Length: 428
Image (cartoon, rainbow, N blue to C red):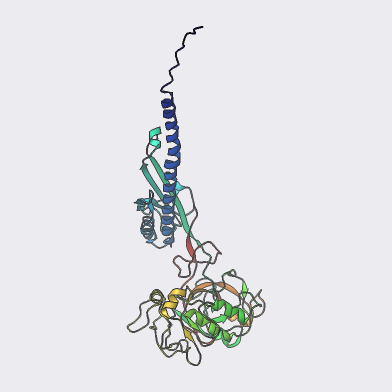
């Protein structure tokens, strides 16, 4: 009846072994989640810094002898404004990070600024590395310090341009049919704002319809009070339309913060400044607000004592149109003048714009391959609208150069047509 009692098998300690094995697995999983996640964030921060560095450097690649020195300085300045390692330290950008090439090529062919040719360098590469990143958890599994790197390549490419005003700038007599067409940067050009033949050929401008024959005067007004022509016809396209469009002055003047009739701040945004520039004998105004050497350069030139500030200074200060009415556009009509506060709140880049360059002489004689009263676009010019107008005979603008060059005031962002200003874009 009595059975022998078997001893119970001892199992104490098995749980500790299982927990120990589980901890090793858990540390590995935590390491993957935290350490690799941290490295991914740092990689993203490094890439942002490399992108900014390359873009800033590429903007300076204009072919001048000091281009690479400026590119190094800009790349380092902008790159180091980015932070890495969870925003704990500045990005490790130095002049050694930057190399240059004349073509988009394998990374090994890029050269530092001391060896690259500034006249041909078109691509800027910024290469960054952050070594000795300690692992918080993966170190337990035998992983040592890691290195995170990033690189970016940028160049200058035509942008989706500043929109154009419907003002055809006449190629000067004897000027070339290729850029800059005989136009002189910083010089003021005045003349008639019309279309077709006759007396309009005596001025420096003609009304341009970008989509003839539709639209007419209303299209002109809409482009001037709106953003302008943003889908630019290519060089060689036939544009223009017969007839003088005298009702455009009110729409033109909205860009100076001058509102008449149905126009207001909501349906026709102004520029950031309404300050006007006039000189005796140009545009019919009898008040001089800017010196008259050649070139005038009201965009960024130095004003003489007592003269109006240049455009870039006035833009920052949001200076309104002068109360003295130097362009004589307020008298005889009910005109509302935008204040400095309104220009600051509603202003956009409205007076720096593109204008097509055309051979106005062919409007009267006819252009081969184009319908009557149309002419081919030779190219585009970057211009500054200098003052409000009373009618089509007193337009004055300043030629700011070709838009498809580095640092053009007409530059904007994003890839676009071949005629747009050159802006820095990432290619790798």
